[in-house]
Each structure stands twice: as C-alpha cells, then as structure tokens.
Amino acid sequence: MKSLGGEPLSTAVIGPDGIPGDRVLRMRGPEGVRTSRRQYRLLGLRGTLDPDGRPHINGHPWNSPDALALVKGAAGAMAAFGRDVRRLRPNIVTGGVEGLGERDWPGAELHIGDAIVRLDSLRGRCHMTTVNPDTLEINPEVLRDIVRRFGGRLALNADVVRTGTIRVGDPVRLVLETQPCAEAVAGHTTAAKRGRRTSQ
Image (tube, rainbow, N blue to C red):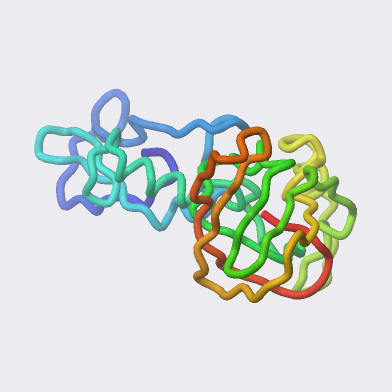
C-alpha cells in the first residue's frame, strides 16, 4: 500500500510493473490521496502480502474493519494536517476521530471528565501556524497549505459550558446539537494545556 512501511523481501520477481504487490492500493480522504508526505504516521503501519498475494495492514486484510481503524488512526484529523500539531496551539486534542469528522461538530458539545465544552465554529488560521515551535523559523507554505486543503480553517473554536477537571486518557463523549439524545464516542483526551480556547 502506498506510503505504509514496507515488507522486506529475500527474493523478488521484477515484472513490467515493477515488484508484484508494490503499491497496489492507495488511500483517499477528503483532501485527495493520502501519503506519508503529509500523514507521516502511515509509515508506522506495515503493508504485507499474504501467501495468496492479498494485501494486509499490520497482519489484517486491507479491507477489514481492523485495518481501516489503523489507517484512520494514522491519517485522521490531526494527521491530515501532517505537521507538528503545536503549530495549531490547541488546548484540547482528542484521539479516535475518523478522518476530518470534527469539521461537522460545530454546535455540538464535548463531555470530558467533569467538564462540558461547546464547539462553536471551525477556526480560521493565521500566520502563527507558519512558525516552527522549536526553531522559530518561518515557513509560509504551512499557512498556504491550510488555505488550500482546509479552506483556511482547521480545528475548532470552543467555549466552556461547565468547568471541571480533565485528564489525559479521559473518555470524550460527543453530544450533537441537532439530536440532543444522540451521542457518539469521540475518543479520548490525548493532550490538554492552558491558553486560547480551541479544541479538536
């Protein structure tokens, strides 16, 4: 599979299309073909062929729910950004979000620990995303990329509805505004920090 970690071979037959099984599959998302150039975590997944030549991802058939979950985890929301998440300076980061699912969350609430956070709108990004958080070097291409692939808006503005303590690893429950009783598990908190009120 394109952009996954490879499979070492002791013997290979070179045919008209190269090595059989090489890049027979590729992944697509809302932004187009997903590659490790932007979703580098894909390189942590191992693409192999079984004895019958069928593609597997970390030992799971490529079209199985387990393989899909692995790919979505590696190339989902923050992974779609494909850069150091600190450039976005989020206050709360959740895992387990499928693809760019959070783009449909404005108006919903996140219930995390004792706290409730209302998700207001997609956040317009500014030139601060161009600054490398370690070296302070500026790369204007970062913001151009956000505009090109995400319409200039990435992550979410949020407000606190109910204060409370949240911890890394807390379950996160997504409560949709349009269906007050409809809830979806949004994943778990993977990071929290003080600062601007944004969330993803």
